[in-house]
Length: 212
Length: 249
Image (cartoon, chains in turn purple, cyan):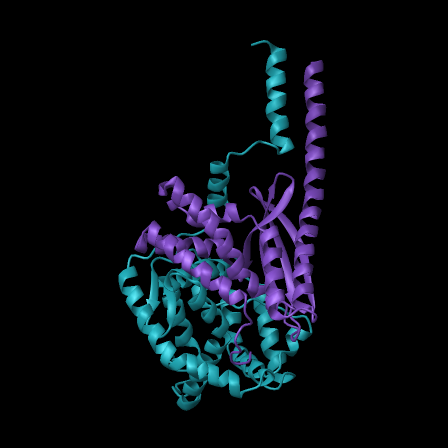
């Protein structure tokens, strides 16, 4: 009977501890995303930096705050199981460069008034972070979410969701369809070509298009 | 097994569950992510035909609609474009309110209808979104979403000529919305008068809406064309995810 009592006490203790841990983890995740968002806006707003410098700094921020290996494996979808070890390694090394060089520069225009993390919700093994952004020349609030994963005590972003559309889910669909069409080797070849193009683009200022 | 040992094993089992520290194998983590977070699947049995229609739409767009949208963006200042968009949005609000009500979203339906009344009057015929500035927010609803809410599945993905991505459910929804909307096909005779709203005004509204929509999508479509290895697959996935999110909102 005594052992049963100890068991109940331990259960209550650890369940409470687990709860408080989750609460503080939510706060930590909130802080992590808020800091990244603020850093990106600070770079985008910084008038001392030219466009290329901004692109490079944001690429670094995206690189340090995202789990490219995890995302890479996810977007490879069913082909992760069928690809050879060499193809997987090549893909993983290419994917990181592809991701940061494709999406990093897009945050260049995020020179907004304010970025706010509204809430954090634990979903499965991940945190869903709901946030809002007020652009510089508009009062219309843009809502978007992040998925954040804990990795050995650090938090890393694994997804960006806008208007209900998940970036990694969309990319998984795109990559799977492309590999299905072209085969893995051809896809890797094209991925490398794309990375080289992106790197070249990101080392230069964007040509002016029609005004927005 | 002695009682003591049983209690100890049970304790560890519960503690590990509560402590939320179970080492999860990578494969399990991926499986959990896929099943718990990624909802919906892609059902595209007509892919071969859909891709041909996508190619047709893309060509028409590159040679006509995109240019029209860019010229519109270039010539009309942003505040004026936003006002026109508000006006067009406002015209579609009564139908959105009806769809909200049909889904039992009474608060959203009332917020939508209030927005329509406020913007039509204080917002000078809908050109200014006064209601949103006053903190009235609503979610837009259409009959495709209503069907989804009622439990109809999206069925097969469809790429419609000129209209773009859809599915069987949303195509039915779109047809119903257009049929009962006085600014749409207007096939319902209202008070016995088929020309409840003059035909030329309905055509003007439709053309203007197409130009406005395309202008709104300029940057998104530019990004897809530039970044995607397979724009068709990207658009298909994004469309299906967005519709699912709209139904679940």
